[in-house]
Image (cartoon, rainbow, N blue to C red; front, top):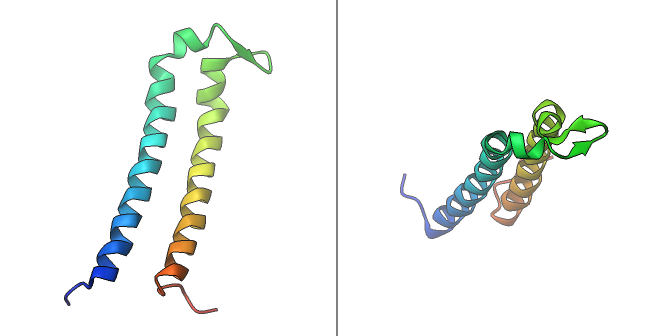
Length: 86
């Protein structure tokens, strides 16, 4: 099956979204770990910030990333006419 320009545009936007969200995931996961010692100088809810980011903040960030992906992809699916019928 040959892809049309519309299919290519849909997949380009999908890949850009995925790359942006993976970048955010990387920064939250590895960036915060890299600077954990510096972040621990600050507190959040009486916990060192570096610890809090790994214990709670990263999980919250991952859930937000999933929510953003679902919401944006549903909008893209409707825009490009590939949404599921309800």
